[in-house]
Length: 104
Image 1 (cartoon, one colour):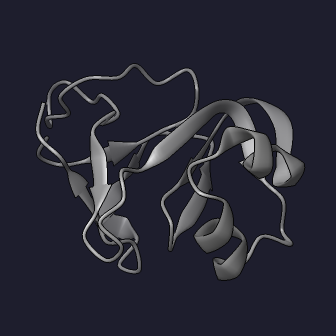
Image 2 (image 1 turned 90 degrees about the vertical axis):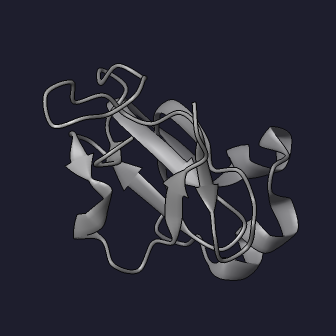
């Protein structure tokens, strides 16, 4: 993917390009070396913190306690970072995330 896009649940998955704006479904974090998980129609609760994800990734049953249902959104997380996204977003606009396309 180049550029790498994140997006809400209505954004299609695939290889992202400037012409074909698709959200990457093969994201990997270069900081914690975890695959990035994503959950359609959910956002993360504001009380989420680093230790929550560090202790609970990637177990969905444990993560659900901090997930809020929101139609059209997508909740992304690795073991060290998390984001709630509503619309198509270029990953380069968020300098704090260390997520890259893990290759399709």
